[in-house]
Length: 175
Image (cartoon, rainbow, N blue to C red):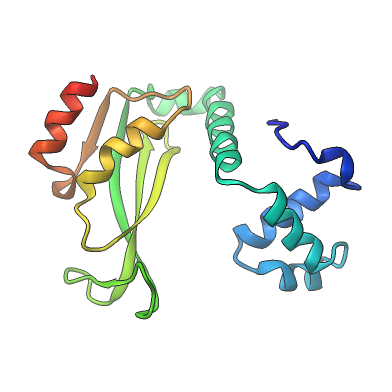
């Protein structure tokens, strides 16, 4: 487990509090509903932990660690070698009055795209939320460059949204 929290000693029972915080924000319940449901932690404590202990860099390190632990299991190696991945986006419905929300012509309705790189071992290596009007090919290189896990694909498959001559040219430079 990543021990990157300098404040562990200052919290009483830190692990249950971290789990409650991850549950609160990961499930979209928020601190108030989680505190009402669990009754072991106050909503202010959950919000405080989230504000003081959860950073984007820490989340990226933990994601990398989870992918690396997953890669040590035998079953995923039966599915693939980890040398190829697929990139694609999925439309998520959003309220119209949202900064990332756009009208999607093909799917009809307002929303945004969850863009993912999924290894042939069936684990997501990269995810990003993008507006509907963005060409997905722009994020292909981001997914390859930001993936710091042990699974490093050398082949990436994409649909027509992943095709772009400039991106192909940049990919050659990075190889």
